[in-house]
Amino acid sequence: MILHFYFARKFLWTLVGIAVVFSVLLGLIDLVDELQDFPDLPFFDVLEIVLLNLPHANYEILPLVMILATVALFVRLARSSELVVVRASGRSALAGLTGPVTVAALVGLVAVTMFNPIVAASSKRYNDLVNGHSGLGDSVLAISSEGLWLRQGTEEGQTVIHARSATPDLGTLLDATFTSFTPTGDPLQRLTAESAELGQGEWHLMGVKAWDLAATDNPEASAELHTSLSIPAALTRDRIIDSFGKPEYIPIWDLPSFIAQLETAGFSARRYAVWFQMELAQPLFLVALVLVGAAFTMKHARLANTGTSVLAAVMLGFTLHYIRNFAQVLGENGQIPILLAAWAPPVASLLLALGILLHMEDG
Image 1 (tube, rainbow, N blue to C red):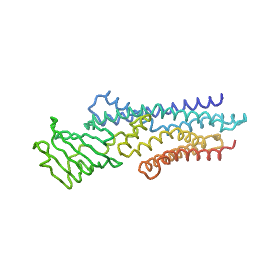
Image 2 (tube, rainbow, N blue to C red):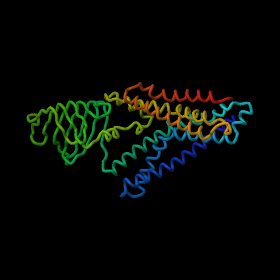
Image 3 (spheres, one colour):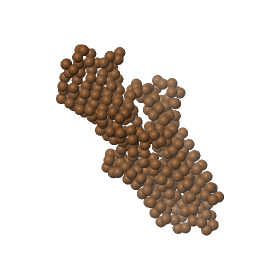
């Protein structure tokens, strides 16, 4: 147990040190970018934006930090001959992995259960601040059992949009109703459409019925039917998705109920389900990265080309991370099942790392 605690402590401090270095670098780079994007804002307002974005940036690079911390630890242990001492004491060097693997699993659990809600809250606040300072404002969106509700603002006033359902990418609303109001709040026009597709600055409506609510006391008498109609759009698909709630904007504890609410309202929750399962698989993937890094760097420094081993470990870690992100995209698009997209890359990475480790380890 003393040996396991020793390796675990060294790995934890290495992980913390690398994470702090990357956090500072990311913060400085983001600060320069935000100062260029918002030159007229006070410095402390820009600093607030940077600090709000920092948790998400660190959460994104957690696999990179994990693989680098593993490589740094075992290269140091190999050069100090501590792994040789472990072998000489009659224990396999594989026993030295117990501490780092346990730390990686615990870090993954803490990141998913505790750090994830912090990242979600800070990312949502960051997005709102950036939209506010950019003059985009906040698009109001609500989900209910009756469907989707949106609000957009134009020079003519406000428009409330209701749709029974929408396509998975939220680019087309089905069975949509557009109710326009003047800047003073008086009803102006009501449109119903079989479908409404969001284009570049316009809503393209199909199968439209229009009522003029301002010109007459009997709008139904003057209602008009149109095969197609275009009206100005103040929203973009990205802004709708942002307001809809990107998966990373929703704490993992709230995701199951949010997914159930979306499905009840008739919307596709596949993107959120894939994200939820990938977050659950995060600790397993971090453990796999530790094993990958150890497999290439556990040999004694005299018996291995350290530079080549480090490069191979880092490149393989990056490759596995890319494959995991690629599987996420396939899962979100419906190309592969959700569970396969979320769990296959971590499990395959773990088995691959164990295979390489057992092949290279001579103890």
